[in-house]
Amino acid sequence: MRVQHRHIIYVQGYDPRGLAQYYRMFRTELRKFGRLYQLNASISRPQVAPDGETASWTIETRASDWQTRTRYDFLRWEDLIQRDLAAPIWGTVFHAIWIYWRLVFSGTFARFWKANWRFATFITYPHFLLLIEAVCALGIAFAFAIGLEALGIPEPFSIAAASCLFLAILGTVLKSTENATYLLYLLSDTIWTWEFSHRQRPEWDERIDRFAQYLVDVAREGEADEIVVVGHSSGSFLGAEIVARALKRDQNLGRHGPRVVLLTIGGNFPIVGFHAASQDFRDHLRLLAVEPSIDWIDCQSRKDVMNFFPFDPIAGHGIDVGAARRNPTIVPVRFREIIKPGHYKLFRWKFFRVHFQFVMANELPHAYDFFMIVCGPIPLSERMARPEAALAFATGDAAARERAWKMLETAVPSRVDAADLGELEPSARRRG
Image 1 (spheres, rainbow, N blue to C red):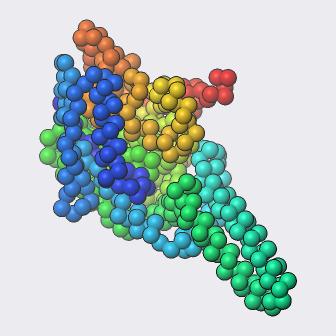
Image 2 (cartoon, rainbow, N blue to C red; image 1 turned 180 degrees about the vertical axis):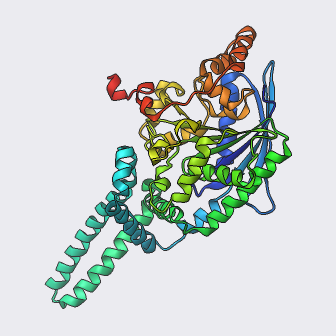
Image 3 (cartoon, rainbow, N blue to C red; image 1 turned 90 degrees about the vertical axis):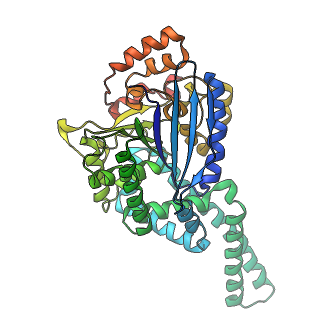
C-alpha cells in the first residue's frame, strides 16, 4: 500500500518553547528536505484547536511519480511546562536536590547508571554544576564574613550578612547563566519526571487521557492510510501512554480503519519506568509489547546522551511476555551517516542539538529520514523492515524505484534486541 494520506500525531518532550518555535524549525527543515530529494513540499499555517491543546498543519509533497498529503498534529504541553519553570528558584533547587538524593538512596540512580552511564552522567550534570556555583558563592560569602569581623562587626551579624550575600550571589548566577547552562530547566525536568512517575501530576494525566480519546476518534474517522504517533525525547513515554490508553478505550484500535504506528525517537523510558511506583506505566508497556494491531518502532542513537542506548524498552524493565512479544522494533540511527562530515563535527558535542537531529532534515540520503517518514509514500513499518529498499526508492531512477517497491511489498518487520545494537552501531572509540 502506497501512502497517499498520512496523519502524524507529534508528542513533544519537556520543552517550554512549544508551538511557535517548533513550527518555525519544522518549516525550515522541510525546505531542506525538499532540496535534498528534489521534491516539491509545501506547508500550511498552523491552526490551533479551540481548547488550545492541539495545533495542526498540512504538508503537500510531490515527486515525479508520487504525491502525499500529511496532516500534522502537534500536541501541546508548553503551558504546563512554562508554569513549572515560573516556580520560585529556591523551591526548584531544593526540591530537585531532594529528589536526586532519593534516586541515589533508593537505588534507582544505580539502575540508570547500569542501563546507560552517559544518561546517568547527564542528569547528574546540573547538580554538579550547582555544587560548583554554590562553592564559589560560599567562598565569596566566607571572605565577606571575615572582612566584617575584622571591622569589628559582631559574629552573628557578619554570619547573617554573609548568608544573605551567598543566596544573592548564587541566585544571580543561576539566573544570569541559565541560557548557557540550562541548569534550572534540567532541575525542573527532574522534578516533573519524578512527580509524573509517582502520579502526582493529575493535569498531565488528564491531558493524556484527552489525547488518547483524540487518537481513538482520528482512527475511527479512517481518513488516513496511516496514523503515526511520534514521541520524541520525553514524548516517547508520553506517546506510549497515549497509545496504550487509547487501546484501553478501543480494543479494536488499529484493527479497523488506518494502520496505527507508534514511533519513539530519542526515548528515555527508564526515567519513568524504573521507579517502583510506575507499575501502571510498565503494564502499558507490556500491553504494547504484545498488541498485534499496533506497530511500534523505537529509534535510538549512541551519540545522543539524552536517550538510552542500547536499551530494550520491554526487557530492560523486566517485562517478559515470552513468544507473544512483537514490539518494539529497535532501530539504531547513526547521525554521522545522515549529516555531512564537516557539519557533524561542529555540533557533535552540543547535546541538545544532537538530540533534536532525530526530528530535523537529513543532509545526506539515508533510510532514517524523519521528513521522509512524515511525507514519503512508504508505510513506516515497511520502511524500517527494508531500509535499503526505502533508500533506493528515495534516490533511484524510475526503474530502481519500481524494484524497490516490489521489495517493500514483501517486507516483514524484524525485532532487534538491544543487545545487538552495539554491533549494529559500533562506537567511534572502537572504530579507532
